[in-house]
Image 1 (cartoon, helix red, strand yellow):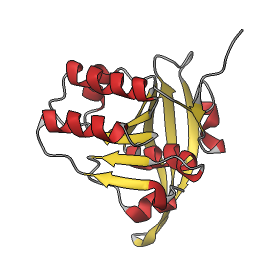
Image 2 (tube, one colour; image 1 turned 90 degrees about the vertical axis):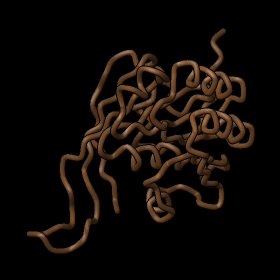
Image 3 (cartoon, rainbow, N blue to C red; image 1 turned 120 degrees about the vertical axis):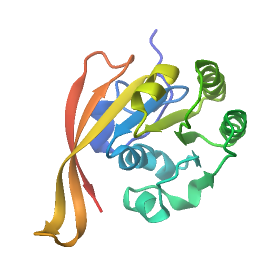
Image 4 (cartoon, helix red, strand yellow; image 1 turned 135 degrees about the vertical axis):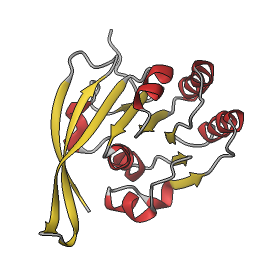
Amino acid sequence: MYEPLPTLPVPSELRAMFPEGGLVRGRTVLCSGDAAVAMALRVVSSATQAGSWLGIVGVHNVGVQAASEHGVALQRVVFVQPASSRTEWVSTVAAVADGFDVLMLEVPHGITEADARRVQTRIQARRNALVLIGTTQQSAVQSVFQPDVIMNTATTKWHGIERGAGYVQGRDVQVAVSGRRVPQARQHSLHFVG
């Protein structure tokens, strides 16, 4: 008899992007492209609202306000900045995996396939959901981690900027979904506020 995989919730507008309709525990999602951080925050938001704790490790360009605007429950988030060495990064990720349901990581340069295997083995053993951010080095991250779901983002339109004046109120993003657990690559359109 088929038993469904244990999942964590994602926002309703993202469910169709995931083969199982949510974040599967023990699996890896890669968010890449120019809206990678915004996409990753959106992906983890419902899990934090449902009570899961989020450990954000080594992500340099994420702010508390941005996390809040994307629906992340801030009272369940811990920001961790590991030391700059490769081995310290791997050790830090392993320690964070022991205490959090969801991990969001920015992968530093120089991570090897062996390092990635150690991280993913820990994630699978602890039944965490792993969300990677690959902004500039997507292919390197993709080759060492071999993510289950890849969400490559491209902003198609900004809202709120009128003839060089005003402030950004949102953006439209095209998301190409692929990966080894995605039976058929597909495209989705999203609107991010803020």
